[in-house]
Amino acid sequence: MPSLFDPITLGAVDAPNRIIMAPLTRGRADRDAVPTDIMVEYYTQRASAGLIISEATGISREGLGWPFAPGLWTDAQVAAWKPVTDSVHAAGGRIVAQLWHMGRQGHSSVYETQPVSSSATATEGQAHTFEGKKDFEVARPLETNEIPRLLNDYELATKNALAAGFDGVQIHAANGYLIDQFLRDNANFRTDEYGGGIENRVRLLREVAERVISVAGADRVSVRLSPNGDSQGVDDSNPEALFTAAAKALSDLGIAFLELREPGPDGTFGKTDVPKLSPAIRKVFNGVLIVNSDYTTVEEAQAELDSGNADAITFGRTFIANPDLPERLRTGAPLAKDDAKTWYSQGPEGYIDYPALETANA
Image (cartoon, rainbow, N blue to C red; front, side, top):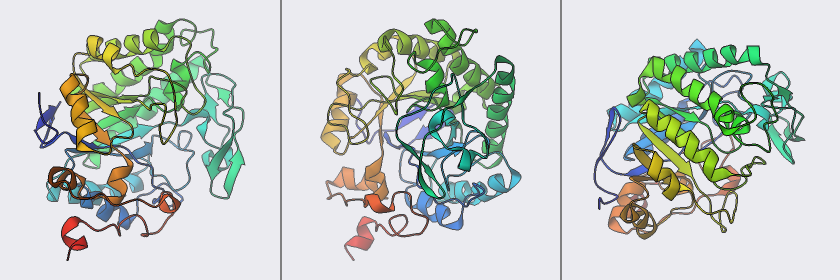
């Protein structure tokens, strides 16, 4: 079986190791979703990852409801992402952009319009806004005739990602966001061709993937799913049937890799007793399969590779405080602890001030 430190081919990207940086929302863009200068340093510090999957990045103003998150729908955003990708590449790294439409998971004060979703539903709890936490709102169901516009937004964001120098894109279809709201039957009550049975609920995911592939090529496109258990209020009555169907559709399209976020009963961001579905998905997905959620040690991650359930591992919060995570894992060096209070703050503290090993030991 391969080691975490062995290279792997991810479609068009040759990764030097199997320690992948998971997408991590950090809230360091400006109010217009334009990346800022400190984002260049943040991503460059982490260029030793086998591959960096960028923080979730909005495909449109309608789709980006998180304050100070970046976008990819304007020329200014593209221009501001270019120094990030150039610097990562100069440091020997590889980076893809994660394309995000939040659906009902944002707030109108950020979206500048009513949230949209598969159906007229709302998430329990509160959304992050520029003014602090506010109650989630009931979403407006997307009309069938609006789907082509949505696909156009994904196409534009993909073109912009490539123009900005990204090595590819990842479609965010996980964590209770828009595509996940179409996939799962506790959030999708549609009666058109995008609702009802599993084939219809998978339709939007497949159509988005097809449109993005038409721009970037299948070897530069990946997808993230979160198949087991509730995720920010969305869930499904038959997750294995649903997500094996989704994975089979993506396998048939030949995407570069599929990433699965699979929390367990002791998860640090969401908990569930629903068994992980990676073994079932492995049987129907013929490409590179990557798993994620709460991996912090070489032993835990290597066990997944040894089992044959996964080809690589995405590490999330451990990359926040450990910019040189692959080297720390390789040498057995201690891992620094991140500060949750600075996850989404706007300054350099808790963002670019975590030292690498040689600096920490100096």
